[in-house]
Length: 193
Image 1 (cartoon, rainbow, N blue to C red):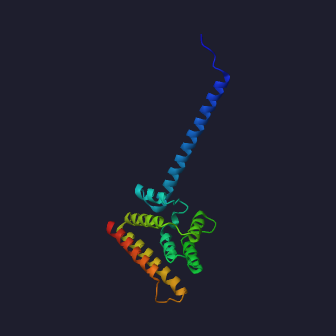
Image 2: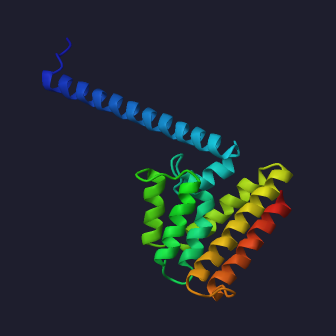
Image 3: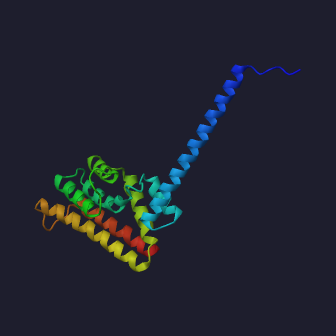
């Protein structure tokens, strides 16, 4: 003779399966959102290289902030002497605007957060790794154009901010050292490609 299952037991079993279903649906939703984010970043960077995509995602870039990738060296230059001057901030926001970063967007908010508090040395180094990888993935001619444009922008930024302080022919030692490191990063990207 079978004993009837208590009603309380059936209700707790139904609740368990409802919770399990909800968890599975939430996991599937998160997985789909992550895949969509991954696809959008790949589209913006024009690469399907999983290492590049993993690197930029690990650094915290999203499809709404990846536009800042090549502005990070300028942020690093601005922080090189330990403080960002109002001129450096203004210049960075102007350059960001020229690249399509609009106020009240996640990219603008991220950039202003970096201008308030310096990202870590690991973030800057990781970003250079991502920039190098993106450069490596480009065709040779385009790679050189991208590299030249980035290093030119970095040098112009350093000179412009130094001119503001009356140092017409003098880029501060910290900025000069970083510019040399940037040249080495981009030379390495050219050699690998």
